[in-house]
Image 1 (cartoon, rainbow, N blue to C red):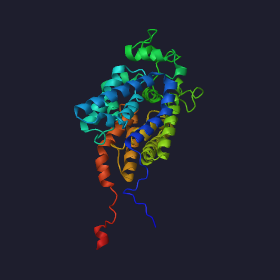
Image 2: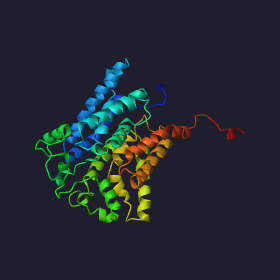
Image 3: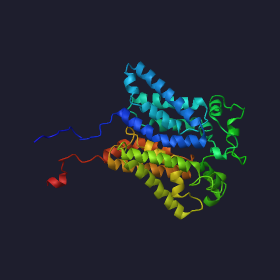
Length: 358
């Protein structure tokens, strides 16, 4: 009789770090395509700038540390961080915003702590929070969907605007943000928050142009983008690249909170569907909160970690100062990971409690 022996933990999926990171990047492609379709080529330019900055920064720091930077770059962790940060920024944000953010993510959040595997915080989310606090104006200048835009925005226009602040025809970023009705458009979360602040009800706030269901199924372009990222996230679960615990519990956390508040007062609180399919809940749940370094490592811990992120997102969105709070929620819970893992450690095989030995 022949026996095939394998070392613990008997994991038959032998993907290395580079393969895992590449699969995650591939899973982001559907969402990136739709984000580019709805909001223009600025997204692709931001991704390119972020990748170049990430690779140069990581290679330079590793060279200074006398490390094999070629081997480290092949793990694609820096590239993934760059892509995640780039898709979180407004497509036409000035070039220096993404460069500063990516440098901060790689040099400060990742390498300062010792590199991959030692960082306490998710690099992309920490950099996003830093940029949002430091440059709130540049970080809030989102474009209307192309179908609602007053001016066409070609690849050349995007390039000019990112590097000069004006399109090739001399239009400023504020002018490019005008919709066909002559008003400057914001994200759905910003629009809802502004409407409620003006005394409008939830239903009245949804009467804004960007929620026109005759133009976009599920009301807005962000819903389609979220669905595309959801597809990529489900593929990652199917390929066993990530576990289901964090995405499921994170979305369940915000669904429960939103449903309770919507039942309490539907005139002033958004529905669960609105919260899930607007903003970065889905991309955050599948691609950011699941970071293997900064997230909880036990199954019970992942459920707690994800659910707490969902609750924090709803609390900050509803009563905090930022409409989309995914990055803040992830950073907050990154700090709690050591405590969560400590109290959710699985019992050692063969271990007996004192009560069972009496």
